[in-house]
Length: 419
Ligand SMILES: [Ca+2]
Ligand SMILES: [Ca+2]
Image (cartoon, rainbow, N blue to C red; front, side):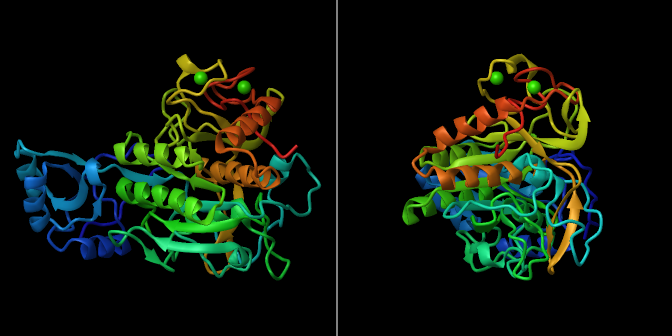
């Protein structure tokens, strides 16, 4: 078995076919398809005419069925090469997607502060002692799962589902053996804990839908993510709820399944927030799904003042300079920025940790969106997005490489805040 590879902070190492799974995730892959060897397996999307489809599906176990968009399965190199020769079908590798965070520092039993700097910054209140708001808003965090018994989160966990192991999902299963999902969930809605000793997120009364779409190593497949996005939208419709999909993940490549799922969710009234990526500071390094027009791409700010404002972190992926400056969002534009460096939040086993990344910036915006929406439930997702943009314009970011007065390709419209 290939040894676990250490990730760089960025998603640049996403070369297709590289095996980046830890031992735990290997086991999951093996369960899904005994037919493919673990060493060189790919998740692929196959589109085929009905006659051909039946034959293929008897030979290759279907992982997910997307109807007209095709179906996904896991194949090895040899099978992949053979399928590529079949002129009757279209086959493409499914994009691998990763968390957008650097290595965590060190888990601790208690937080160094109950109100982390990012929460104070987004509230624009340096003496804030607790946060509030978000009641009734569902925040679907698509990530590595969550520690649903963490004292700071337990009251807010409403759904817990695993999309990585079956052709639908496993209800009640969202164990987080990575830490990333627990961390970003805490930034959205940690409530200080039932013991009153924990940390606060931005919107501590919002409800968490913990959708596990990434394995224990922080990597996952686009088909599972697309399925979870669609499920969040359908659950919003079924329950008559306002839903925010928060994705602290990304890849350098655009994926059709995720793009279509984001468009679907957006059309159903869901607000979609995603990390810009950690491949900065060069221009045009923004990752997907953040780069999609219907997703809000979030850049990361450091707790450092530069040029009179917070500073965009060097690692934060930049958008396209050619389409910046106009306060209009096109594909590959950064939309807003939020605290994403040295962020303290919840960690599995009731602990706390401090991490940096656009992964950490994203849940600040998702939490703010929940807080605003909870107070203005008549807003559509599009109106809520405009409100976030207007708040960002009110706090322009001018610090960091590529940041300047007005809409820029490093920070987007600026830093949206509570007030
Ligand atoms: Ca633009
Ligand atoms: Ca600016």
